[in-house]
Image (cartoon, rainbow, N blue to C red; front, side, top):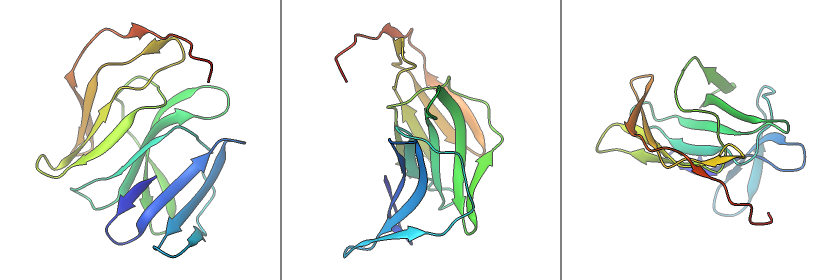
Length: 142
């Protein structure tokens, strides 16, 4: 889920499939957006890109594996961005960094390792800002 200045709060995907629907909260209720089909995800990271004004989502779980793809919400639906960058992961955090004109991605895991790295998406390219070796993931029962 992420906030967008024109669309309000937007929710994508979820467990139980994974789901591939997109919803908008206007402060009073949820409305499903009628968009072209896109692959389902859960535990994806999403934020509004201050440079383009579009929502971007990254990674997540597709029901079989963690993924490293990035998608941008446009008028007709989600468009996959042709980017190479961070290793596949879910449970990461993606935030808008208006002062940098970019998005920042931190953390997440790939099922075996927990990431402690930070990446920046700016001008259509991912750049590693901090690199740290992944830590072993400790199973916590969820």
